[in-house]
Amino acid sequence: MAAAKDLLTNFGSVIASLMFFWAIFQQYFPHHLRTHFDKYSQKFITLFYPYIQITFYEATGERFMRSEAYVAIENYLSSNSSKQAKRLKADLLKNNQSLALSMDEHEEVADEYKRVKIWWAFGKIVSKQATISFHPLADEKRFYKLTFHKKNRDLIMGEYLSYVMKEGNAIKVRNRQRKLYTNSGVQWSHVVFEHPATFRTLAMDPIKKDEIIEDLITFSKGEDFYARIGRAWKRGYLLYGPPGTGKSTMVAAMANLLNYDIYDLELTAVKDNTELRRLLIETSSKSIIVIEDIDCSRDLTGQRKKKKEEKVEENIADEEKKIAMSMMGREEQDMSQSKVTLSGLLNFIDGLWSACGGERLIVFTTNHVEKLDSALIRRGRMDKHVELSYCEFEAFKILAYNYLRIKSHPLFPTIEKLLGEVKMTPADVAENLMPKTAKADATSSLESLIDALKMVKQEVEHTSES
Image (tube, rainbow, N blue to C red; front, side, top):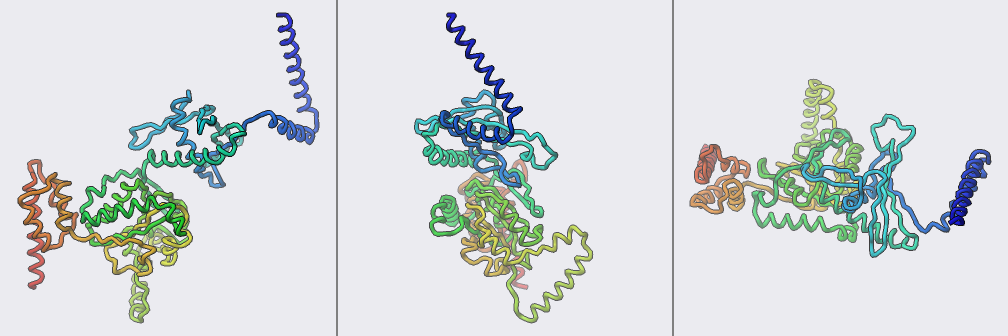
């Protein structure tokens, strides 16, 4: 017993002496000697310390953007941390109805991959010279630290980290709130995307609908195919047809089918091609970039004119434009003076800048496809052209089931005959099927539609006679 006490006493004395020596060394030895000592002491410790550590910081680059690796790790650890960690952070997920749990500061959790144990720790370093900044990440460094035995180096740095990235990104897609973005200059702002449209409720020919669905799903699974053929992983859709035929609704249905975000690009708010490129860089993968009513951008998409009389018309239009500009406020003038060119837009679609990010759909909608420059909508740029036309009987049956919950009715043959004789958009058909009173039923709604179709038919006949 006495020998044990003597051993502890001697050990304590040794530790105290070492601490005293270290304090003297730090205070009185020259800086360059201490630097060499630290360097070689670290190498000495490394010989006996069998673990490797890798740190993944949240912020990267001068713009303090979040590291994709950090985000993937955060998502991957969310399931493990909720089971092991004692201190957790909680964030709301979709529709503010579920929680995502993640590790809080100074927590550590263990993971296992192919019977190899790994440890993850979360930490944060706050800058001592924190300044007022619009980038909170500039004043603190949050990080995840991975620790593993050095004998497993190849497995962890190869297979395991690839597995973590893949699983983390998959979790992000499942849990994320999809967003609808719009641009103001070179900035995107967003709201949560909650449009209920689906291909099941979309009023169009079922055969054409199934063809589009198959095309979209094939595209979403085509990463390896696009890499093999040497093309950017993107696809262009041109949706054209009269107003009210469901072009915007189809975009929403596409987003809901693929679980993509939507970027609604307003070209009139973009000053020039440089701003257009900046906006493109800021878009994410798994997204749909939409330019609606592109036929309204006459300077961009109109047919290139060479005839003399057309140039005269353009000069007259320019004079009228100057008069109109003089009557506008400064803000309105800035909006109208967009210098985005046709070549800039084409480079955005399929040039070098189109490869900045993968898995993206580019969608143009137009009411007048004949007004668009052929260079803009050729195959390879707008790969798939989808005509959305007036309501046919098959599309009507979808609307009847959506609005009235009926699949057949004695009035259906009459409606089928009338739809074959007159043109009415799905939006107009849907409005006539909408119950107008609390007592309205399927029969009264169908009769309302028949009356509207007959009225359109009479107007057409009267116009043709006159």
